[in-house]
Structure formats: C-alpha cells, structure tokens
Image (tube, rainbow, N blue to C red; front, side, top):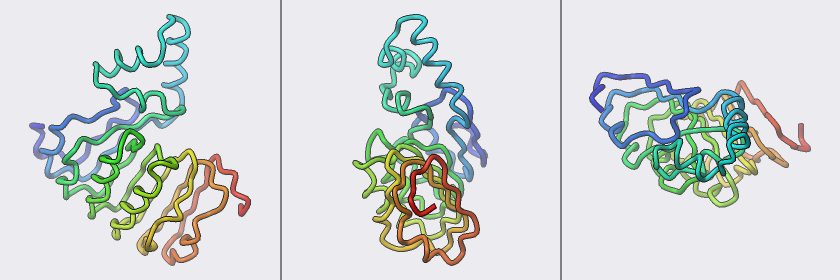
Length: 200
C-alpha cells in the first residue's frame, strides 16, 4: 500500500490468490496482471496433496494463510486472484488480467465500476454469475480486449455490443457464439479455446 507511484503490478505465475485491501491505495496503478499461465502449478499441488494425504480444503487453508479462499484453489486447473472491495476506486486501471469471479458477486460489481478499463481477463464465469457478469461488462464501453474463461461460456446477456472491442478470447463450452459478436465492427482478433461450438 506504500507503493503510491506504482503503475504496473505483475504477479503471474505466483501462488497469490487474494490481493490485500491496501491495493486500493495505489491510485496510479494502470496495469494488473495475475493468474497462472499454465496448468503446471495446480498439477504439482494435486501431486503433493495425493502424496501427503491432505484434502484440498486443508491445503487451501494452509496455502492461503488462513484466508478462506478454497473456491479459487479448487477451480479446475487454473488460478486467479480475488479483488478486494474498493477496487473500483482505482480509476487509473487500464488493464486487469487473471481475476477470479466465482467466489461472489462483489468482485463482479467492482469490475463493472472500472469504467476506464481497456483490457480485461477473467475466469470463473458460470451459470450462477453469468447474468451479473454480462451486466457489469455492458458498463465498460472503452473495453478493447476481453478474455473470458468459463464453465459454460454463454455471454448472450450483454445488453449492448462493446463497440470498441478489438480482441475477444473465449475459453470454455460455448455451444453457440453470442449473437452480439456480429455487431463488433472493430473486432480484428477472435480466439476460441477448448470450445464445443457447432459454429466453428
């Protein structure tokens, strides 16, 4: 919280799963990069759990320093960070990548208020939070790049097309592409990963 001049925070590839409340003091922060780039860290964690006989809840409690965030550690093979309440105050943020949103609606609400965002990467979208996530995304009119990892990649509930979007990455079981994609006149990059879309 004392790094008041910090503009970029990159914690990719670390075991950090929750950012401290003091991050909201970094009013000059423009770029936040988090999450695991590969599955390696989680496969290793599972090997340790199997070898030493711990269950996942005990491991999460221990690894997270008693910060109860087992849902992040147990989510598929990918990791991410949970944003603290008050993140919406970081008005200088242009880039946020590797944020996990499945632990509650607060994180989604915080993202929806970062109206200056240009690039966003999230994971943990599911049937329970899909509608609220779409509502939050609809507020980000300046968004140019969006990356979404989901259990069921349905984003049909975005109320208005993200007109400035140039890059879109969707990872998960899509089924069909969202209908609003054809309205993205500035889209130059579309990447689909681990999808089962019948349209591809």
